[in-house]
Image 1 (cartoon, rainbow, N blue to C red):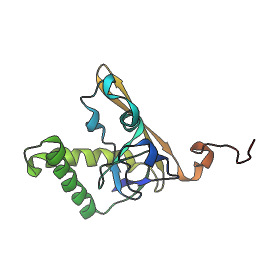
Image 2: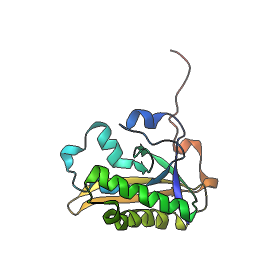
Image 3: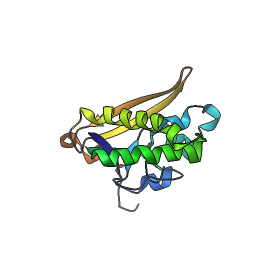
Length: 160
C-alpha cells in the first residue's frame, strides 16, 4: 500500500500555514476540515490551508507538497486509529470506535490517490468552494520530471 509523506523544499510552509506539518509525517487530503466553510472563512492563512494544504497525521498541520511512498499495513492501521482519535478530540465524534470507519475511508482515499504513482512522485491539492461543496483537484509531478523551477521563486541577490 502507498500513502504520502509531507515534504518541504524551503521554509515557506512555516510562513503560510497557521500550523505547518512536520517534514516526513504521513499526510492525507484533510478536506473534511472545510466541509462547512463558506467564503467568509477563506481569509489569510486559513485560506492558504483551504486552497492547497494537505493534512499531516501527527501534527494535524498543513503542507503544500507530499511525496508518495510505501507504508506498512501496521503503520497504516496506526494512522487510522490516530485519525479516529482526532475526530473525537477535535470534531466531537462520540468515540474512537464510532470514528474508525470514517478514518479508514480517509486513509483509503489517500491510498487510492497514491496507488498508481511511483515512489517519490510529488502530489499537490487545489480546492475551491462550489455550490455543491468543496471540490478538490490533484496534480502529480513525477520524480524524474520534477524541476526546481516548478516550485522555486527566482530572484536576484544583486543589490540595486
